[in-house]
Image 1: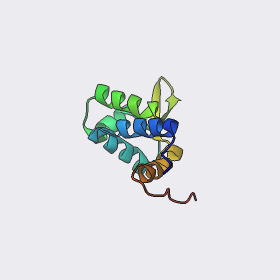
Image 2 (image 1 turned 90 degrees about the vertical axis):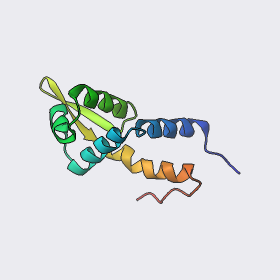
Image 3 (image 1 turned 45 degrees about the horizontal axis):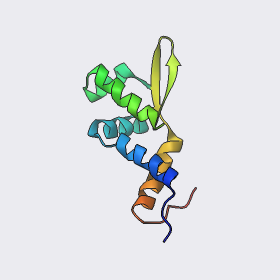
Length: 104
């Protein structure tokens, strides 16, 4: 039996840690469903969390590249990283002992 290589296992573990909070799962869902960059203020208005809480969650998600940020004047706008999010189901499949879905 061949195990997942250590580097991939570490990367996947960081992804799972990033999604280990229900608010971060909701934030990823919001950005994925919206499909357009959002400001922290817009996210706060939808999620009903404090600005500092949203900013901290965005930092954690950006560290694993689930979320990307882009400048917008003096502020930043956040969007889902479609490349990273498309890899997540494959990572979950591999960790659970299933073959990765075929790449489209």
